Image (cartoon, rainbow over all chains, first blue to last red; front, side):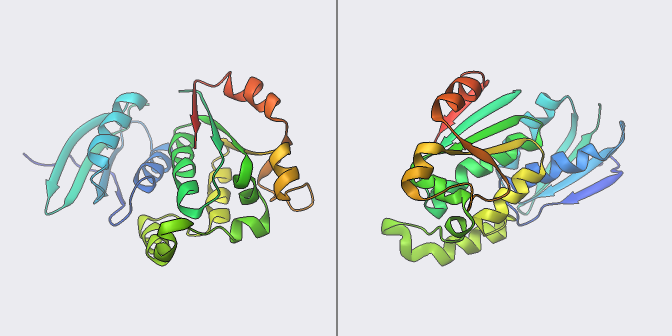
Length: 79
Length: 138
């Protein structure tokens, strides 16, 4: 499956909780509705944190891909 | 969650990181966070106290490793700098307990500017903790 096309990318590689979520929140605030953010992470805590944050904040998690310890999330801003 | 209240009593470097990390997470989602520093933790709200925080007890020798891990995680390694980052979210208030301040030497003369003031515990418990959606004690 092809990854959704991202309009913006946030690389949190190497960083751990709370920073991936802190930076994701900050970045999303500056995006427009409909933009797609690709979040790159190596913190395994994001496997649970990002899907639950999407559900809580009303954003859409389009895809999650994990390869060689690198997680790539595509999130569409809905509001 | 609209609001969260946290009471922190331990001032060792490693133990104070968790409540600050939790506050950072929730504040960036827009939750109002009010933190009361009691007992030894009140020293973290003074300039010299925040700079002097160390890892206590059996993990004391591992401080260098812990600070390196904190830096790798992306957080500032100095507690005062973490407090500044939380304050910059606009959603976190730091309060010093008046009793703790009197006992452990924190007053309006050495309080860090990020602190909202020295308050009575009764005020915090009734106006912040009781009214918050969620409370945590560290």
